[in-house]
Image (cartoon, rainbow, N blue to C red; front, top):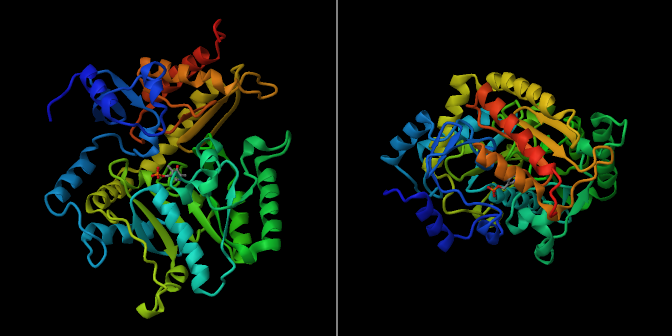
Length: 458
Ligand SMILES: *Cc1c(COP(=O)(O)O)cnc(C)c1O
C-alpha cells in the first residue's frame, strides 16, 4: 500500500471514520489524532517517524510487541493455507489445537472451548449459557445476574447490562436487563485501618446474605478477577474470589470469570484465577488471547455445563449461538504462536522482575507525590490515582479533564499513556525493558505535574 503523509492520512481519516469511545469534536483540538505507519516491539511509529512507547499495550491486547517475528511467521504460513472457514460442520488444526492447549493451561476442571470474536461476545455467551443451563436442568426461576459495582464487561447490550461503569451505561439503561449489583471488593474503598483482606471478607459476606435469601432466582455472578480494569484499575484481594467460589458452590450459582483483560499473564500468573486457586464455571478470554493481533474470544466451561446441552436434537436444548468468524484460523494461529512464546521465553518469570522494577520506580516517583492518593500494582498492571487533595482524596472536577494534559504531555515525550479519568495506569507489553520502564514512569510523573498545575483560565 502506498504511504500517505501524516497530514493526508489524518485528513482522510477525519473525513470518514467515527472512532471508538471518542467525542469526535475532541479531534479538532483536545485530542490530536495520530496516524501510524508501523509498530516495532513495544513501539508505535507515526507517519512522521516519531516513536511512542505503547505503555498500555494498545488497549490491553498486545503481549509480545507489535510485528513480533514469530507471530508474523505463523500468520504468514496460515495465510497461504487456510485463512478462515466456518466452524459449524467443519474444523481445522489451529482451532482444535488451540482448544486443547488452552484447556491444558487453564484452571483444572474446564473441558470445553466455545469460540467467538470479541470480549463482549464472550460475556454474552457466558450469560446466555448460564441462563440456558438452568432452564435445561429445570431450574426455571434462576434467571438473574449479580454484578459488582464498578465492573466492566463490554459494550453490547447484555455485556453493558452486567457491567457497572455509569459513563458507558447510564443512557442505555432503558434497553438493559435488570441486574443485582453488589459492593465491589476494591481495596481503595476499604475503611481507614481496614485491610484489603478484611474488606474482601466483608464484601463476600454481603454476597453470601444475598444468596442465602435469593439464590433460587440467581443464575450467576460475574467478576473481573483481581483487577477491575476499565473501572479505573481498581484491585482487590484474591480471598474474595475464594469466598465467592465457596458461596457459589453452596448456593448453586455460577461463577463467571471475565479474564478478558487480566488473562495471559497480566497479573503475574497466566490466569488471575490461579492467584486464588479457583476454577470458575465460565472463563471468558479475549484481548491477549491473540497477543493483540486479531479479534477473537473464547468461553471455557466444565463438562457439567456442556452435558446439560448435550442430547438428541429433538430435545431442542442445544446452544444455538454463533458468530460468523468463530474460530477464525488466522486468529487461532496467532493465539497458538503466543502460547508458544509463553512456553519458550520464560516470560512469566521475566515479568516478575520487570514488575518489581516497575514497583520500585513507581514508589520513587509517586508514593510521596502531593497529588497521589494511591499507587497499586498487580503483576504487570500498575495504577496511580491522582487527586486534588491527598488527605480527603477529593478529585479534580471532571469537566477540567486534567488527564488530557497528561495524555498530551506523554505523547509529546514519546509515550502512549491513556489515563482513565484520575487514574494513570501502566499495562505494557512483555517485551519492554528497564529503560522503557524508566521512560514511561518519568514521563508519567512529569505529565502528572503538568496535569495538576493550576492554570489561570481553569
Ligand atoms: C475489554 C473488555 C471487555 C470487552 O471486550 P471487547 O473485545 O472490547 O468487546 C470485557 N471485559 C473486560 C474485563 C474487558 O477489559
